[in-house]
Every structure is written in C-alpha cells, then in structure tokens.
Length: 417
Image (cartoon, rainbow, N blue to C red; front, side, top):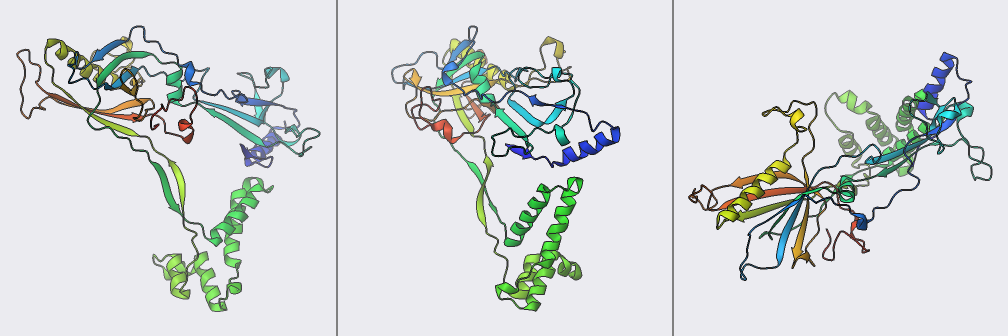
C-alpha cells in the first residue's frame, strides 16, 4: 500500500533540515524498517498447539440419569492470555524507501536497518528509483507500508495453554446475533470538486504549504463556480455562490445553514448523493444463564469450584506474589485476565448444527444465590438453587472468509459463526 510519494511533506522538511545542518550531500543507503512481510504466513487450523497437561475438568451435573441425558452440552475451556512476543508481534509492519543509513554495513542481509544504527530520511538523489525495464524506469520509488496483522484469536489458537474445562448442560436460550455497521453519507458536486482539487494540490510539489494551498484553491473554486449553465439566472447564481462561500451566512449573523439559504433563494438544494456506506464491524456478545441445584456434597463442591474459578479467571492479574501485597496490586502494570474458548457439543463431538465461537473474554458475571425465590440452604450452608449469568464477548470480529469450507475450518459443519 503506497502512503506517500517523493514529494511527501516529511521528505521536504527533512531535506530543509539537512541543508541547515550542512549534510544534504551525504550519501545514504536505503534500508527497510520493521519486520519482513513479503511471505505472509497463512493460519493453518491444523497447527493448534495446546498445553493442558495440568488442566482440570469440572462437569455439572456429575452424574445424569437417562431422562437428563440429551447429548448436547456447552464446553468452556479457560485459556491463559498470551501477549504478543517480541518475535511474533500482532502487527508486522514494513516501511520501505523512507529511511537510510550512511554505512551500508548497518543493513542486514535482507536490507533491514540494524538496531542502534544512525538513520536519516531519504531525500534528493538518495531516493531509490525503479530499475531498468520497469514501466516506471528512472522514477523515484514511493514510500510504502506493508502490514501483516495477526489477531489475538489466531495467537491464542496457535499456542493455547488450557487451565481448566467446564462442561454444562446446554443453556435454555441459544442464539447468536451478527451485526455490521453501516451509516448514511453524503457528497455533493461541490464537495467532490473541492476534493479533486485538494488531491491534485496535495500531489503537487508544494512541500509544507500543501494543506494551506489546497484550502485556498478549494475556497477559490467555491467563489468562482458558475451555475448559469444549469439554467439558473445571474441573481440565483450569485446567491448560491454567496451561501456556499459563507458570505450570506456571515451577513445574517445567525445560525442558518447553507442548505436552508439555497432552498429559500432558489427552491432547490444540492444533490447530496445520499448513500449507505460500510463503516465497520462489531464484536458479538453471548449471554448465558445457568441454574445450579446441587443434589449432594460432591455436586456442591463442583458448583462452588466452577463459580470460584470463573470469578478468578475474569479478574485482572497483579503479577504474582511480587505484585500483590495480600490486599492491593503494588506493581506498575496489571496483566490481562484469562480468555475462554466455547463450544457446543453433541454426543461428545462438535455440534452438527449450532453456531461456532471465536475466542471470548468473560466481560460480566452475576450470581443469584436465592434463585428459589427465597433464601434456602442445606445443612452445610450450600444454597438450594443458584443462578449464574455469564456474558462472553468475542475478541475478534467475524469475516466472510471464516465461512469458507476447507479442511480444518473452525466455523464447523453447522451454520458457521
């Protein structure tokens, strides 16, 4: 993706500074910044790495009678959050044709600038050019940025440390809601013309004054536009120009929009070319309600362990004994809570119909210890009926490519995500 060309304002500023310092004639060797993105690694679902040797398993109810056995369960895996490592960042970024070094020995075998090397911005003849035989032969190469993003979902799947498993009867309400963000947007002919003029000025060789020159040109365009070719008379034409330039509004001294002045003066408004445009994605949330009615002391221990571990896993970490004094976090930083992998299961395997999940965070948890309508407990103090409300939220959005049918597809064989 090209982000700038040889007339980029940053290069102009750097060139002026180099002239002031008297080193504008220094020869620089172009180098690359960041990490190599030329061979972007495709995620392979078959390369899951899990470390669950010490993971423990909790299941409720402990034993099911034939009438309670449905074959459908919700499996919750608690996964330790793994931050990006130095050698495996979430976003690999490579910047080319912008920075150089005086000593070529400060470049590694792949052309990347070595740590600690003295660098400067490439200007003038130091800017690399396209080689012979290229369609742009002799032209200066633009500054380019290449990225290779790795989501937290992928990072967790590639190296998962499972802390424990929880298997529960499938909730009574099972649903999913997929949403994307669309919004209305307008662009009339004058705005489009101004945009075109501004882009041309920004592309021209005008250095630090690019923004100011573009604004001046846009204002001049508005004042000089002639609408007589649209069948409007000179008086109406002048009124439109005045309202667009702001003169009419300033003369009124009140909060009146340009659109209202045009409508009052001409009975017309500019065609806004209203359109619904894609603006972004959302993350899915999944609320679950689980009712526990422990029937014996063993189930009581399981229920208590499930609630305690979920509460612990959703809380931030102070950093171990050295970062916690028994009551407060004493360190500068807090570590992220654990994450969760959810899965609907049928007969001990993947569910053949229900939706799949991406890695989730537990964002909310509430426990009602009087779900029977009034407080009631067994002799050991265990409440008779407990209702736990959990809210999970996926850490990454869903893409169309997630639904592609291929070997190891994580969307499963059902309805997908």
